[in-house]
Amino acid sequence: MHTFPRSVYSMSNIEDSHICVVMVGLPARGKSLIAQKIVRYLKWLSVNAKSFNVGSYRRADTPHPTADFFDTGNLEGERLRRAAAEAAVNDMLRWFEHEGGHVGILDATNSTRSRRAWIEERCKSKGYDVMFVESKCDDEDLIMNNILEVKTTSPDYVGQDPEVAARDFRDRIRNYEKVYETIDEPHLTYVKLINVSSQVIINQVSNYLQTRIIYFAMNLHITPRSIWLSRHGESEFNVLGKLGGDASLSPRGLAYAEALPGLVKDSVGDKDITLWTSTMKRTIQTAKHLTYPKKQWKALDELDAGVCDGLTYKEIEKKYPEDFRARDDDKYNYRYQGGESYRDVVIRLEPIIMEMERGSDIMVVTHQAILRCIYAYFMNVPQDQSPWMEIPLHTVIKLTPRAYGTQEERFKANIPAVSTFRAKYTSANMGGEAAIFDAERAKLPISGAQANGVITINGDVEAVPQKVGAVSVVGSLGSNGGTLVVE
Image (cartoon, rainbow, N blue to C red; front, top):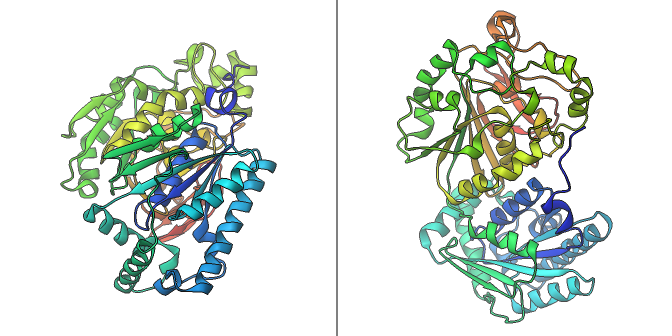
C-alpha cells in the first residue's frame, strides 16, 4: 500500500499546538465569514479546527433579539450575552482537552479590552496560545454589502421583512460602536485586517501555525463573488474507460466545448471573470470558445496515476489487485505507485486556493480529482468522503460563498457523456457507449450530482437535490448522505 507520509500541516509542526483564535470587530465586518474560511482551510490541510460562534449560543435563549438587546444599558441583555460567551469558551476549552483540537476560533465581536483580557486569561490558564484577528472596516460600500448579506442570511432575522431587518441591524451596530475598542494591547498576538486586507498590522507572532493562519487571512476578501467549476468535456480516454493520459476530446466533448459559452452566459452576465485551465489538452480544448482571459496552471493537472496511467479500472484490478483494494480502503491517502494521492493533490493546490481567495470571479476548467479537492474545500466536505464525490461531465457548478454558508447552482448541458464514477468496492467497467448517461432513455431521474437548481447549505455538504420533472427531492452525492434546503 502506498500512502502519503505524515503531513507537515497535520502532524510534526502542529501536534503540540493549541491556539485560540479570537475574532474581533464590529458587526458587518465579515468576522464570521473569515472564521469559517480559516476553519475550512485548516481542516482541508488536515488540521483539527473548529469555530465556536457565540451568537449560536446566545440564540438558544434569545433567537430573534432586537437592537435594544445589544444596548450597553440593557443589563439583562449583557448578562445573557456574557453567559453565551462563557458557554462558548467552556466548550472550546473542553474541545481542546478531550477532542484533540488544535485551532479553536471564538467568533464574536470581542470588542472591548476587558472582554479580550478575560478570554486571554481563561485560555492561558490552560496553557493554550491566544491570537486575535480583528477585521476593521470604514469602507461604507463594503459595510453596506455586508448589511445586505446579513439581513438575508443571518439566523437572527429569519422570516423578517428585509428592510426592517436592515434597520435593526444598523441600530445594533451603533450600540456596539459606543463601547468598541480596537486592538492596541502591545503584549497580544494579533493580526489586524483593515478594509479587507488593504492594510495589515501584525504583532507578536510566535509560531509556525500562527504564521500560516495569518498568511491565509491576509489573502482573504469579503466582497461578494462566485466561482464556476467545470470538468473538461468528455475525452477519448473517458470513452475507453482509461485513467489519466493527455487525450483529446471526443466528438461529444467537442460539442460540450461549443455549448459551454452559452451554458455559463446567463450565470456570468457581464462580470469580468478570469478562466483557469490545466496544461492538458482536454481542458484547453474545452475552454477554446470561452472569451475570458485565460491562464494555464500546472497545479491544476489531473492526479498522477503513476504506473496505472492509461489503464482501465478492470486492468488495474487484475494487474495490481492489492493496490486496487488498498485505494478503496483509504482513497484520500492512497498514493499510486510512481504517482500521487488525493492528499498530495491538496498540498499542490494550496497556491490555487490562495489565489482563488485573493481574486474575484473565477472559472476553472479542470479534472475530476482536482475539482473534488476544490469543491471539498469550498463546501467543507470531509477528507474521507471527498474522493468519492460524483463530479459529472458536461456540467457547470457555480459556488457563491456567503457569510453563513455556500450557495451552489448546477447547470447541465444537454449533451450525453460517459459516467466516470466508480463506487467504493466495485469493479466498474467504465466507458463505452453502455456507460453514457441518458436519463430519458433509462427512464430514471438524473442523479443528484447532475441536477440543476440552487442549494443553500446548512452545515457540511453531503447531499444535493434531484429533480424529477419540476419536483425537487433530496438525494445523495456519490456515496454520501445528508440534508440540505432546496430553494
